[in-house]
Length: 374
Image (cartoon, rainbow, N blue to C red; front, side, top):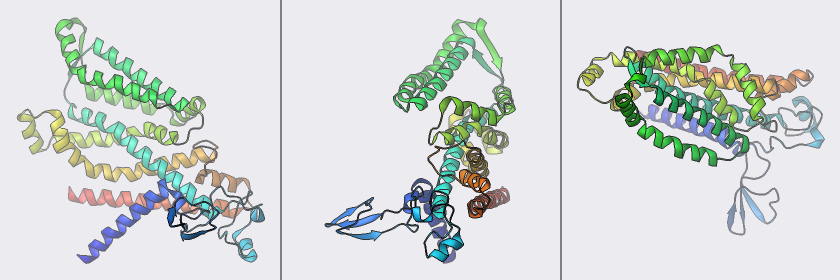
C-alpha cells in the first residue's frame, strides 16, 4: 500500500513538472534569479541586478533561451565549451544562445500546443459524437427556417472569431456569446413553433448520417493546405496554432467516441433508462460521459503526439508559432542547414523522439488497462 502511495506521489510530481515546463518555462531556464530577498521584501521575478539583495532561488539552467553570449557565438560545440571552461554544456548556436535553454523553451512550446490542441479537439468532437451515436438509427424532424438561422449564426461565429484573432480584440467574442447563447435557449421553442405553423417546410434527416457526411467531407480536404491558407490570412499569432490544430484534429476523436457511444447505448441499464423516458442530457451526464472517460484518456496521448508532430513540422518549414519563439522544429532546421553544428540537430531530435515515445507508451498502457477492465 505504501508503494502505491509513493507511485501516486511521483505521478503527481511529474504532472506538476510538466505543467510548469509547459506554461512557466522561466522556472527551468532563466538568467535572472527567480526569488530575491531585498530590504525585507521578496522580489519575483527578480531583476538581473541583485545588489543589496539576497538570492533565494535560481533556475536550474542559468541562461535565457533568447539570451546571447558573445564570447560563445558562432556555433560553439559542447567539447569546445568544455575546453574553454564554460557552462554551455550542450553548446551554442550562431548567435551564442544556449542549446539546453533552447531545448527547454522548445519542449515548453510543444507541450503547450499539444495539450491545448488535444483538449480543444476533444471538446469539438464530444457533442457531435454523442449526438451521432445516440441517434444512430433514428430520424429527426427539422425546419428550413431553423436551419437557415443555424447556418447564419455559425458563419457569424467564424467571422467574429477571425476578426477577434486578427485584431487581438476579445470584445467581439463576448458580443458573439451574448448573441448566440440566447439563440441556443430559444432554438427548440422556435423549432416547435415553426413545425406547427409552417409544416410545409419540415423535412426529416438522420443526425448520424449528416454528421458522418460532414466528417468525411472535412477529412477529404488536405489539412496542410488548410493550415497554409489560414496562416496566409491570420499571420503569425502566438497561441493560435493550438486553436488551429485542435480544429483540424477533431475527427480523430469523433469516430472513436461515436462508436463507443453506440456500444454504451446498447447496454442493458441504458436501454432500461431509455424505456423510462429519461432525458437525453441526463443520460449523457449519468451514463455516457463516465463510460467514455477511459476511451478519452487513452486517446488523448495519441492526439497529443499528432499535434506535436504537426507543430514541429510547421516549425521545420518556417511556419508555426511566433518567429521570435524557439521551437524544436526550428532548431532541427537550423542544425540541418549547418551540418557542422551537429548538436543543434542531434539533441532536439533525441528530445523530440523521447517525448513522442513516452506519450506513445502512455497511450498504449492506458489502452491496454482500460480494455482489460471492459
